[in-house]
Image 1 (tube, rainbow, N blue to C red):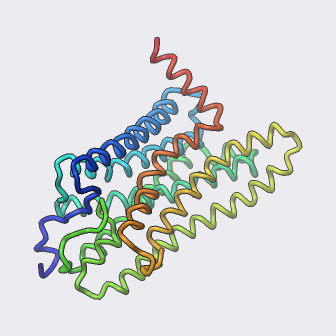
Image 2: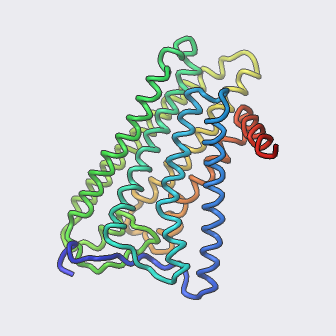
Image 3: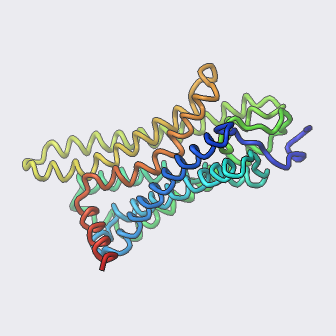
Length: 308
């Protein structure tokens, strides 16, 4: 294969060899996928149906759930279908679409988590200005900016990746089309592009992470000054789930894309990919609903309405 134009398909990494193992993989991924769809779907439905949740914080949470649903739906169903039919192939255009959607959704989620940190900072540190700074128009603009930044970021990275000539075969050592694995198939010197990918990704991830950390330093400083324990508990219950989601997302994504090649192996890459691409969309709804009384009440009302 002289270049990428001669490629009609890629071969994804097969999870298991025997039929029993393939069915086990399907069952495992199906359970995770259904849990993610149900959890994020319940949050989306609760926020839309309960007018008490029509606030900036829950508007951003709804957007986050949409991104989580999109990211896990981009990779898990295809992986299950391949195991079900005992195939490994994904078309060239399908691989391009998968890369574009994944990078778009992950970058938009990173930007949205940063916006959510700003929302909590304003709510706790500048409560008197919250209605002005976090009005409906401002929230829509910030959410649109997060989605738009993810789109532009993904467009650049996808174009950069698939503009390389690919002549090292078509076998991708991952269960979905992942940029680092595709770069390994290039016959050109992709070192500079790989470095560029790492630099740009690092700037996005750590730039947002530093902003979030600085926001939470000021948030916790303000929370500790609250005289009542009830006020402190309410502030912490609002912030800690977001901080847990940020930590999970940033740590797994950063390790996946910034780890040294010397410690890379197919098994490790597989585990890391599951941790950053499959686990967060499944755990995020659980994390946000565990200590959130308003969301729990909305879900309880939703279940009662369904039963009636």
